[in-house]
Length: 405
Image (cartoon, rainbow, N blue to C red):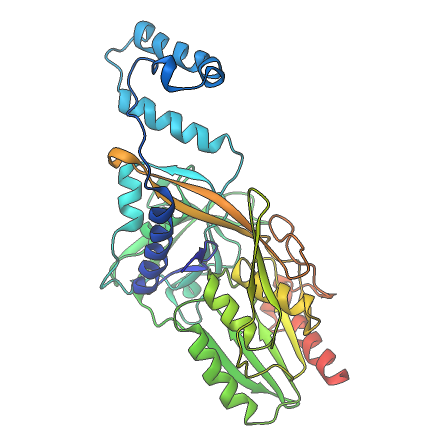
């Protein structure tokens, strides 16, 4: 199973699902990346082992390597540290924020089993930017009580600067035993200076799907993440709501950072009876189509999908498929724009791993998601003032559109 790393939508809470997500990502990496490589030494490899072109290309590198060994004031230098630094720099030079190097300690930390850890601050997070970012605090969670808001970037944890640290690893640092406190340094839009927030960890009950009937006989379903139980929870919610004979259905994907690709396809298939859900495009231009699965429970009911700037990855796959198939309108704000696939590939000699973008997602009509996002059919902003006043103009517009239909 492949992960669209957004999202995970990944959350700081129940550790079992986090482990499932990480383990799946790593299995993809091992399948692709177990290949041998020569161990780096302080001297250039023989010309016979590499092409003349590469020999010329790396002449300056090996010159710099030798100069460090010959001239640097503090000798001897650490060859392993130099090698890891070179790999890190190479990945950074790609200019892709989703491709990176993890040294052995970071890789072990990111892939260590989280069995038994079901405790944290209670927030869905986005791991696709420079820093770990709050997508949304869970209702009633310590994160919500501490005043954390969607879009808050965590730039330091317990005083440790998170600059240059993979957001997945930052997420792990926020997890912890209930009753313990973690200090988060927050960078928030509209606030000039970073500020600290202390959050006491707790046992978190993590919902994947919630649902209810709204006034006017409208069904409402919110999907928070695309995890292992999301499809079954969604199908149960649809059974309950459709029995009420609703006039329309609102699917809320706001602040949903993603999760499993397979779950995204399953969710979309509940609303789309046939055709392509998403296209995977590799670097060589080859494409693979992922088709709708049969047996969807809500393929005919009029629907609207709510999205915002924190709807990412699997959320964008579902929303893009519904939009391209003219199955329903998107209402809200332009989505995040996370449409790439990463593979974690371990390096030889236990030297860590590299995370490399290997493909991009396209909507059924071939639209690029990555760094573009999806433009809603009806754009409606949701301001901080609206939230404070208990208003939701995006939801109101969705009800209005369905009532008009």
